[in-house]
Length: 549
Image 1 (cartoon, rainbow, N blue to C red):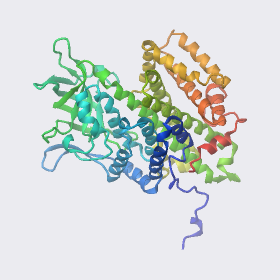
Image 2 (image 1 turned 30 degrees about the vertical axis):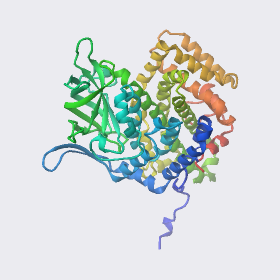
Image 3 (image 1 turned 60 degrees about the vertical axis):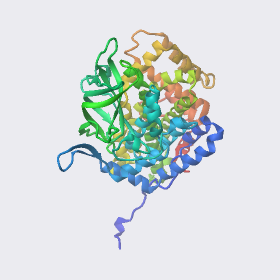
Image 4 (image 1 turned 90 degrees about the horizontal axis):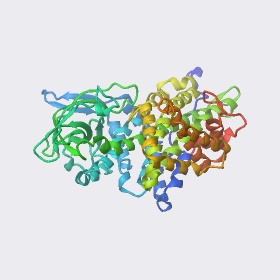
């Protein structure tokens, strides 16, 4: 018989056994808003099925096990042969397989594919963010390969397959493949034009051998990689070029792909990030010599959107856990969720999460539209969103963890895993300064991008005086080019928050839009979460974000 001192009371039950998609009102409404009505019933069914899977106790346990049992590098077999393989816990393979079968690499092959995939990505990566990397890289490789129709015809059906076919074999023998990417080198970092990896042409047209290194190479057990290397000059060509590097050659032999080590990262523990060496490695050219950045840039843009989606996913899970805890936890004579100060904190967090989700799904819908205006909009909006949404992720995770008190600081709560993951998307695919400078390039070189952005935010003009004032101030900032690089972060922040405000004014409930505009655009806000004006309808904002389906 248990001692009476061990009776457990006043503890929140685990947040399991629920539909992660249906419980996220902002996400559901974004799908309903942007998706073709003829596709809605099918999409809702798919997303709710994935949501129930994501919310199940078993799948959440897979996420815990994959994180607690990180990948291991095996450079040689027992006989001394070089194998360069990474071993993963079975839970990793279950998670990755489910992500592939749920269509997270198949956006390019079905109507409304980007929006449906974006919503699924937000749902699925709440379980464990680590498997998002190979899913993202595989998805994003498609537009880069389309610069070479022959390569696209060969590889795209495999990349967009919903079959997870693990193991290293020739790609032609597999029902589905995964891709990784290698751009960054030791001496260059984000300055990929400083890459020193060399590509020497071989006798067969379009084939090369690579010699060099990649300081960061994602998803090293993938079937192929897009990498950048300096092609040996031939006439007026040469220079930084994009290449496809298969792990296994067509005859079944292993390509030279020496994994030197796996990175010991702050978070994202279940995912293998590697350092690799090329030494006579066979590769196929993708696009023209000297056009490597232009060829791979569409892949980078797609992965940057996934950084926005990943941060929106993490924020949603953090806020859901915080609100769930405060719904059940009692202190000082009542439930935490009913305490005015805690309600202010939760509402503030919920605003940040909904603004991130609403913006991310708007960007995904623009990919599906594909019109010239939407492409111009994406050119400015993607780096701005990538900068701002990923920057907001860590403070949200910290404050949400604090809502659980000491319980949140304990590993079993899952909140420390979210916290360690939270800075990652701001760093991957170009850190904050890279994104801010990319926005400046879009403003200076592509006037259509600003026009498309202003047309988008202009749809909400006149609906809220604080939004109108923020748009006016933004236009004044854009008109003043003095010292523009030094204040690029400030400018990009305003571009992102004005866009979020315009979307919420158009589509969110009045209580959400009012609170966002008052705080983020109107300046009635402190320096920490929980400093919203007390006169707002915060209870409605919190209830909207509560994870009940």
